Amino acid sequence: MDGVDTDWRSGAIVNPSIAEAESAIKRKIGSSIVVVAGSCSAEYEGRGSSSSTEGDKLLIVKPDGAVIVHGPKGFRPLNWQPSTSHIEISETGGEMLLKFVRRKPRETLLLRCRDVWFVAWIDSPEEGAYWMYLSEEDLREAIVRHPEELLGEKIRFYVKEKRTPAGRADIYGVDGQGRLAIVEVKRIRADERAVRQLEGYVREYSKNAAVRGILAAPDISEKARILLESLGLEFRRIDLKKAYKLVKRSKPKSVLDYLDST
Image 1: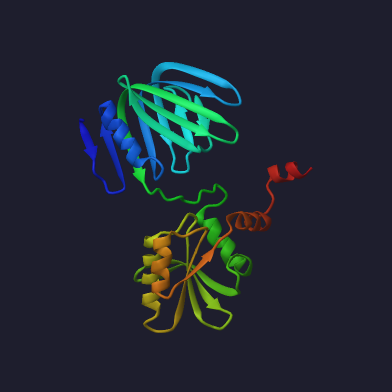
Image 2: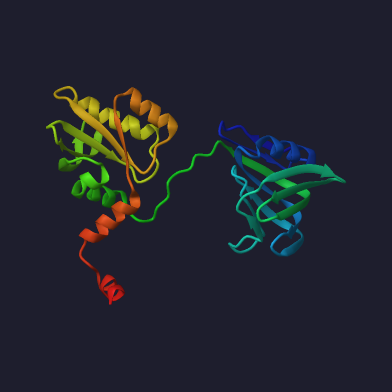
């Protein structure tokens, strides 16, 4: 075994023996993203059938049981299954066998690996929201123009990127009851760092007046949510598709938009 990455959320074993690779995969599969590279053959039976002779393969197994097998060229996988019902990992005759079974529809993918070059994993991976609809600036603009539709309440915003001693707050205004409101906007899943940013802005303004702190994002991690609530701050879940439609509706039509509508 040439080396082990000891990062707390990830790890890798380089040039493991078959027994070491089998042990590592068994420990991590089902809770981690597992990546295996080696010299393997593959056989598939299900809605059709296929086989791949021994060669360089890259295997990715996700915590939900999704399986992807890549060859050394191109972006399309040699084989993939969106989910699995049962996974078997064993060693026999100096080979590692990985069997992935899906019940409905019935599919079986079997990999035989004679050599394994590395096994890598990411523990407890967090799903980040991924949208290509808007930039963060577009999302701020949408919230400023349509607070009732996106935040669920009427806030009159005065400034975007309000400068404070703690940094630049995204948007700043007054709510329907006359209270100051600072909104920190994230286009992806909000984490603890986003909460700490908002806390800093609110702390600066709270020296002179009562102020609400609102974190607006499509999602929030569990740790961030707990921290947010402990600090007395608020979270608003943003529907990015709705925001995109609102932005598109308010922007002047381009030539391409005109052609699409004709």
